[in-house]
Length: 234
Ligand code: NI
Ligand code: MN
Image 1 (cartoon, helix red, strand yellow):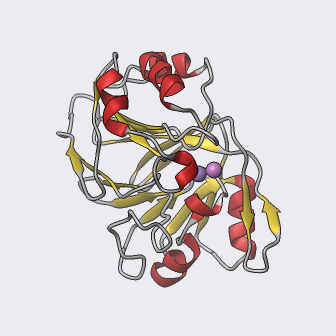
Image 2 (cartoon, protein in one colour; image 1 turned 60 degrees about the vertical axis):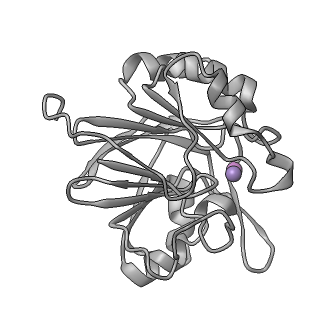
Image 3 (cartoon, helix red, strand yellow; image 1 turned 180 degrees about the vertical axis):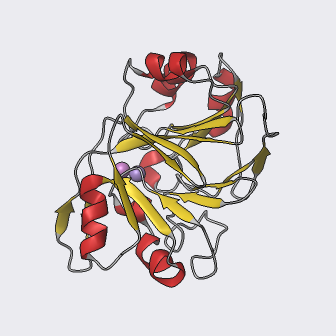
């Protein structure tokens, strides 16, 4: 399994058979190395409705017909905007897809979409995503503040890579993300959701050098972590 980072909170996962994009904020994301007009995911997974996470989802889904997985209210909003290939889920729920297993976790944050007319559309609860495939587990925390049930997420899952926001202001800052890393006890901890905007400016290298539990790793846009398929766990 190849897990790559593409700036802000954009993660791509390539399993043996499928390509999955999480929170594809591409065309307006200066740090992103992907091209929204040519990416060809089999599925897009969304943590919440904020524009810096939904990003190019509608255009990509309309062009490719890929499946879009999102919390119910966001999924229904996207459906109302003409996205037909939708699978809604919600916090605590797991579903087995042909590309892997997805579980939505809680996230303490908001969820709304500012549409083209500048109107705010509320899109329910935000979430985080646990993704399981090829015997491996990836956790994308979404946008969230620190919450102590991250201990439960860590105890119930053997997480290979955890993507944690460190930007502060709207999510955990570095100090809280260090505690999150302790509680999640993933093998590798990757900071996300920083430096995209002035208000979330952080030093990711300082953060990863402070990570006490697991290996902290700064990923530049386009960097890939390759996880060997663990057939014992499949
Ligand atoms: Ni957000
Ligand atoms: Mn965000």
